[in-house]
Length: 231
Image (cartoon, rainbow, N blue to C red; front, side, top):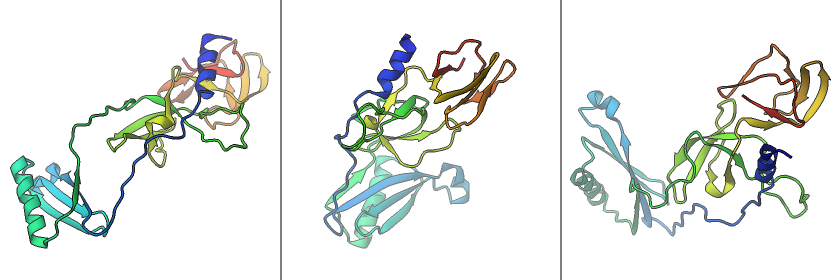
C-alpha cells in the first residue's frame, strides 16, 4: 500500500470524538443577559450624517433590541452610548456579553484549509465503516464563538448549512486525491467511473480535462484502483 493510500485510510478511519465542549447560552429570565456588538456602516457614512457604526444591544430572553448610531468606536463613545441605552430604558442586565476582539483560543484551522467532516455512528453501525466523510470540504469562514466554529463549502463552492466544531473536522493531508467508488469500464486509455465528488459517469480520456476546485483532472494511463489523482 502506498503512503498516500495509507494516509487517506488513516484519515477515514481515525476515531471521532463525540463528547466535547459546545456552544451554550443559559438564560434565566428577563434582563439576565444582554449581548452587544458594533455594526460597521463605514461605506454608508455619507448618507447617514457621518455615523460610521451602530451599537446594537439585545436582551437574549425577550429578543428586545436597542440600536444607537455612533460616529466612532472609541472606548468613551461606546461607553456613553451604552450608558444612554441603559439609563433611558431603566433596564440593567445582570450579565453583559460582548465581542472582546482578541481570543484566548486560536483557531486550529484556517480559511482555505481542506477538511473532512466527522460522521457520527450509532451503536448498531458497522465498525469497519469510515468515521469521516469521503468528500473533502473547504473552510470558508471562521466564527470566533466560544468555542470556535467553522463554515464550510463544497467542491462546487456551495456553502454547507450550519457550523462545525473543531472536533468535527479533520485536516486532509492530500487534498488533491479523491476516492473513486467504482471503475465501470476501461477502454484503452479511457476509464469510466462513478463516485468522484457526486459526479456520475465520469469519463477520463486522453483529451478530457475536468476543472475541479481550481485544479485539473487529467487522464492517467495507469491508475491504481480505487484512487484517482488530481495534478
